[in-house]
Length: 118
Image (tube, rainbow, N blue to C red; front, side, top):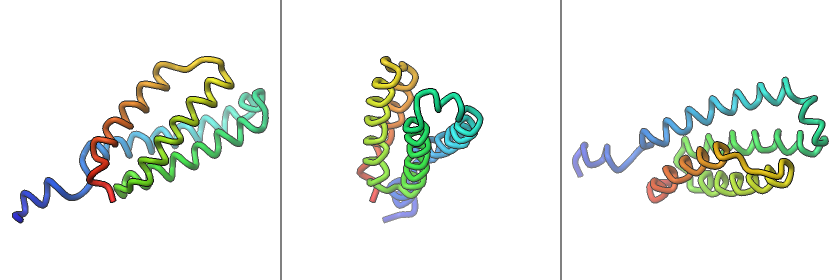
């Protein structure tokens, strides 16, 4: 195996790196939003605030796992996405198009690289 072949089959793909960096930025923004909007979230009840905090924690774990190219992170992100859509529909009665499309694109890209994950 040559160095060029090794470089193209191993390591983290650029797309996954970009996804992880963007998700990490969203995590920081989400944490800031959770801190400053905590009283507004409490309108939905303490349970929703705890759920939001838990989803941030799960997302942070997913970003770490995707950065390390771990399959469990892809499975966890997929499950968190599904749970998030169900909870959003139950609480708001609707589903956001942006809240649906962006994670689906992320999932599609990650699933394309699933075979390279350990």
